[in-house]
Length: 404
Image 1 (cartoon, one colour):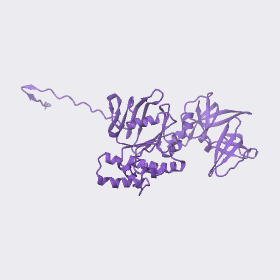
Image 2 (cartoon, rainbow, N blue to C red):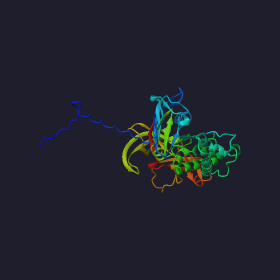
Image 3 (tube, one colour):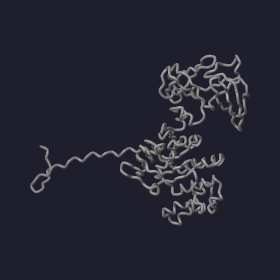
Image 4 (cartoon, rainbow, N blue to C red):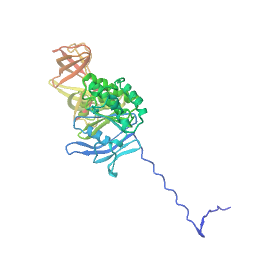
């Protein structure tokens, strides 16, 4: 029996078959709770250009770089304080900035909290009222405000201090009030603009620990601005290194330490020793993170040439000038410099100790290696004195070779 065809009649005419439904367009893939794309703000002599990055929910990402690199401008664009020339910013399901469509939410309409370098507390308000201020401006019920403020003051270690005035607090305590105020309404994004720079060393360390603890306990999504590599390394899930308004490298602290793309990035993450030479050989080996390239670099000394081995980061060809990077804490000092029974030394240079600085737990050494003065760190008491002849070395795993 033949197949029957169903027809629909309308006024004696056969209605055309319905057109097939258009294929649904898949929504754009969202890779983070905060998405920034092509962010640009040009001041002529500064600003930020074409910055793109994402932050997962509950992560803390740090913008790290020297003064004038664009990190604070980026943060101000996220906050809505600056209107960018181009770019998009999305937080969760809300587009906060889309310059092509003329979208730019005012700061008060953004689900963000911000902690400033200068604390920015209301001097005429008590600690309690400073922390309660965001809740009151959002129309929160009076009965609900007190328990939330008291809970937040307890979280930042200021329980019982609600009646005090900001002028009665230390700098560290004032910054904790600013942090509590930014978090009391549980914003979708926390922005921190060099929040520790006005504190002394002891208070800075204490508040840094508080920020890290609260960020983890409350699963806060945060963007942190600093020029201090210790803050960045200890607090961050990821670090965005900025230079001249651009993001030049993005990675975890461990990734940036292991594979900086330039001497600029390597130096920004802490002190480095740099030895210049020529790439003489290249080979591959299996390292802790898989297959890696290792180069033999010829370093010219006063009495000849020595060859050092280092992991190659980035493109390099035999015959090119390269720099070998040793970090002070990775250097081993061998005081048996003239002992003929000493084992063969690998990646070693002879030198003379020219300075010793003894600290409470770490000793610093300056070692004249002829071509340069190397800085080394050792735990505990000094093991070499000024004038001592030594050999300094650095394991291949910790030695990095970068093109100039």
